[in-house]
Image (cartoon, rainbow, N blue to C red):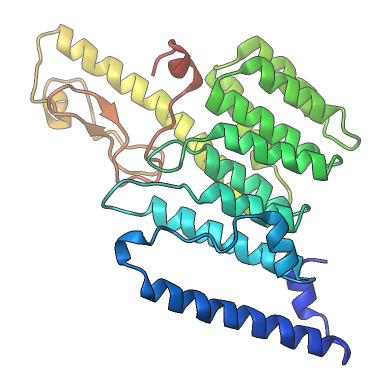
Length: 312
């Protein structure tokens, strides 16, 4: 039963005293914490971890493990979102992994926390902490608690493919997932494609399309669709960059702009990305990228580039 189910279910008369004690304890803890924080100097107030030990957390929340897990999951979302949207100062996601660890320790079947959490942890700076190692550890924790979930193996393979560039490990994870009863047939195909074409955009599209078909997770589907658009944008950026280089070889020079290329006959219209936002071109270098106001910014760093090859 999830926390939501527990809250929706009618409480029995015998259950009311325990519920009252739990609520009173949570309210008292919150009041004490607020008082303690108010007495500390502002410069000593990092993002606070309410409890750092999963074992202590399980004892502290009595039998309301799933409810507490939901609360820690919400803290993880708040921490990730607020840090990601910060416009001044460094973006540190230091509490993201501890919150996710607490949530999944309190509720070892917390599917969303494992899968969303892995995406959040893997996201490269400035949009995330850039910790694929923590993402893989979180998913392996999910595998240990839920050996029937082939999706975690798929996600481990995906993290290896996209963020670590270790295609052998990615293929191995896909193969392990394919061996789980009930796993889709295409996981075997992904393992073969990963070994044969690791780092290729077409194989990347296969992976994102697989995630876009996730039946019970709207977030993963939307994120996969966005990633597919980013791959299209990468193709377009490469084409535009090649156009700039041809213009440079023909004698054009900085300051670079789309009107300059338009007047020189290299463009017929303003180039826009798959969301309809005009591409950005650096006036000094001529480097092309998606605009910072585009929903596709920042474009991902492709595995081949991280390994020392590839077009970007």
